[in-house]
Amino acid sequence: MTAPLLSVRDLRTWFHTFAGTVKAVNGVSFDLAPGEVMGLVGESGGGKSVVGFSILGLIDPPGRIEGGQILFNGEDLASASEDRLRRIRGREIGMVFQDPMTSLNPVQTVGAQMDEVLRLHTDLDAAARKARCIEMLESVGISQAADRLRAYPHQFSGGMRQRVVIAIAMLARPRLLIADEPTTALDVTIQAQILRLMRRRIAEDGASMILVTHDLAVVAEMVDRVTVLYCGKVVESGPVRQVIDTPAHPYTRGLIDSIPNPAHRLPRLKQIPGTVPDVRALPAGCAFRARCPRAQAICATDAPALRPHRGEQSAACHFPVAPGEPA
Amino acid sequence: MAATFLKSQFVFNWRRNPPAILGTLILVVCTGLVVFGPFLVRQNPYDLTQLNLMDSFLPPAWLDGGNPAYLLGTDGQGRDLVAAIVHGARISALIGLSAMALACTIGTTLGLIAGFYGGRVDALIMRVADVQLSFPSMLIALFLMSAFGTGIDKVLIALTAVGWVVYARTVRGSTLGEVQKEYVQAARVAGLSNARIIVKHVLPNVLTPLIVIATVQVGTFILIEASLSFLGVGVPITQPSLGLLIKNGFDVLFSGLWWTSVFPGLMIMAMVFGINLLGDFLRDELNPRLK
Image (cartoon, rainbow over all chains, first blue to last red; front, side):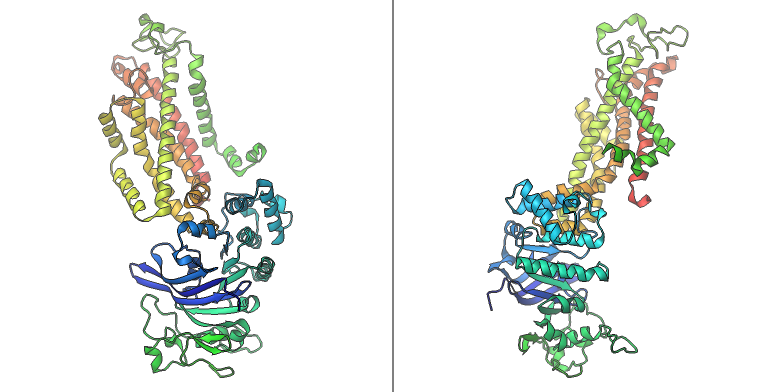
């Protein structure tokens, strides 16, 4: 395997609130190879987005990166200066947000917002910048791009805006794109278009992508590898087909079983019992044990470490699900 | 551009709002008087060589003993009241507008800083604002004026000190809301510096409510300045604003020489009335919550 583009090592990002310390990310590790697309999956509040913001150094107080390394091309972003980080944001690492309705400035034209990024990160002159903006808009499927540069965000539909947001994120040809639930706010029909578009843009630039999502259907279609988070920890990771077809961790298994399957209609939709525990006061041992059908005495005392399970798949569970075994 | 503006919803609503039209008309006339008035009157009321003491306390032209040369009569120094009012209105308007600009700039800057950075800076700025708000603005202005002495520059300082709070609080509130929005996060993700994000992205999005505040505040400032001058701690006697004209006339008001203070008073009333009518319309138009 080639040297990873991004290597997150034991990342811990905590939020010190009045009500207690929220360990939103608590010992997350993963590698991302150049050109690879990785899915970061989990329930709401699982710490997915915090991982993305930690990589960019955009954790605001009361949050803090408490420990661990974020090696991007061998450089540790967790200890990089704000100046250095600003040079990396937008130029080396781009980000796409969830809601295209609010992620563009309503009072500036799309062209002005695109130009701003290029002026900051390239030495191009005005004409070259404009040409690049037009080229970029066309590459995300916006016709009459030259006219559209003069339009304001409210003159675009939601799907078009998300295309613009992607175009802006990719303008400076970053080597890593972090997409934080990029299709959650869009119609289902638009979702597939946007996902295919992102995939194609990534492949053309040879960039890598981290796709943060709770939608396993999106993951199955889009990514090469998947990392499942639960309560700030990685519970399972591996190649996407293997994880989806034969999940090893009961949590992943539960997530997959909760997807409605029209081929096997059940009287009731399956769900994972219980709710995510209070992240300010996580129980000792495995955080999932209260909701886990396989939990035994050891789960209450020893937190399982992430261990190789089968091939490239690993899971953090004392009693991982074997392929074919009922949960 | 001009054509789009004339066809906009804003102009459409304005045309159907008689108070707004009236306010605009009053303001246009007042602006005309303030800008061109001093060139239209024959007399410079502060050039003592042009005054004739023989003409002092002449009543308005339509009353017995009135002189057609002095339409609204004269004051104790034989000063033409029309000339005094247009010059005085100019000083009043100038003070109102400059103080508004100063208060708006300072208040907006502080509000942006407080809202964007939060934490201790925010707490400090907002507590100062709270303390300031717990005193009546007239009291603060009076206190500052008696501490610094009279003069147009001192009036500006006093009015700015009174007026910045409302901008700071409004801007801070809107900034807190805007910073939550993803486009600010997106700007940070794009690698923009904080200063640039504040000026290029946050500021334009918090400006709208300020238009209303600024408009109405010019009226308020004109009134406060008039009160200060009336109490004798405002502008110096050599640069009389409308408030000082009223005060000068007030001394002889009970001698039946009413015109020396009533006409400057009517001028102030017209200016503030026009500003408030337009301010009401702007508030209804620009407040997203009332739509």
